[in-house]
Amino acid sequence: MSDELKRFLDQVHSGITTFDFDGIETPCIELDEKKYDEMLSKVAGASLSINTDLNILQDGLGNVFVEVKLTFSKGNIVETFLVDAKSSLHFFKALANTSMLALSSPKSNYGKDNVFMIQLPRPEKAQDALEI
Image (tube, rainbow, N blue to C red; front, side, top):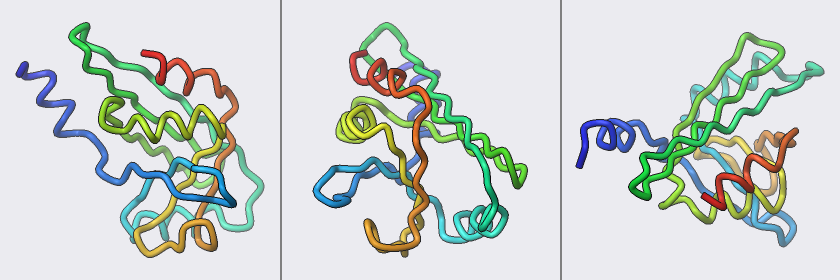
C-alpha cells in the first residue's frame, strides 16, 4: 500500500451512511454531536446557501475518494469530508438519485427531526463520482 493511499484511508470520514426518508434512500454525513450543534447554532433561522463541491480523487489503481466540501454563506462554516467511494457506493447511489445530502449527529432521529438537508446545486458531480 502506498503512503498516499494510507494517508487517504486515514482521513476517510467514518460517519458516511444513508437512511430511509419517506421511502427514499437518502445520503447522510454524521458529525460529532458537539460540532453539529455548533454548526446549527450559527445558522439556525438564517437564510443561507451552501456551496457543495465534490472533488474526485483517484490513483489510477482503482482507488477512488471523493472530497465533499461544504461552504456555508453564513456562520463562517467550511466543512470537508473525505469519502472512500468504493466502500460507500450506497452513499453515492443515493446522492446521485436524490440530489440531496443530509447532515446529522449520532443522536438525530433520521427522517424525523434534527436533520439538516442540503440540495445539491450540481447533481451531475454525484453521478460522475458514481461512474468512476
